[in-house]
Amino acid sequence: PPAPPPPEFANFGAPQFAAEREALKALAQFPQAAGEFASELVEDDFAHPISREIWRKMTAVGIPSQPDPAWLPAVADALESDELRRILSVAAIEPIHASAQGAAKVVPAVLGRLQELAIVRQIAEVKSKLVRVDPSDPTGEASELATELFALEQRRRDLRTRILGVGTNCPAGGRIGSTSGLMPLSVAIGRPRRFTDVPICFQRPRPSPTSC
Image (cartoon, rainbow, N blue to C red; front, side, top):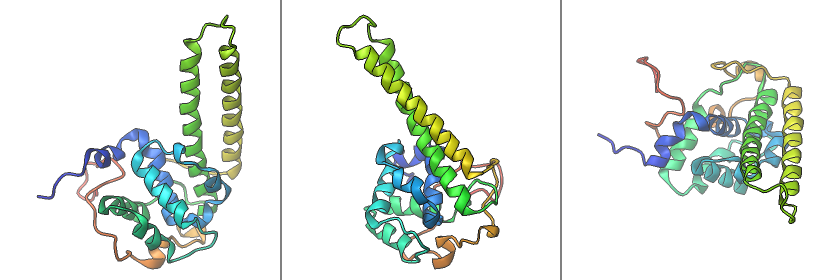
């Protein structure tokens, strides 16, 4: 039997990394639709080392503004292990969980959600620090943390407004359909030469004979 994947690859399927998996799928399949949200993403928006490393290679190759059949193989070539290439191959072929309203709307919303979760983590960290600080501390640390918390909360509200402005209603289990007018790169180029069948599922297996 094949060897089990390393622990970090196994736990990438955990529920808390769902937004990161969806973001990788959106980027792998429709990078040209990522727009300004992709330009605003930073490595720390990805909490898991796998998605962070794949994002790092994507940005090193450069996010295309137009469909580019050579882009996905270039990202695969830049990755340093077969395990990471297998994760990318899953991202390139697994349907995105979004309604069929078009990649130009769905992809920015998926990336915006990833950014929002990163802000939520920052808010939790600042709140944790704030409860441990003496309000009467003459250094003013409590005031600085409160200001930082206010700014983060405002940033989150602004981001939510932008996400809602994209106009995406994404019920779980939906898929981007052919009405998008944008061909996924995985369809345009087939299965790149370094992609392989993989035993790793992004989703938790369902009790179905067709589950991956």
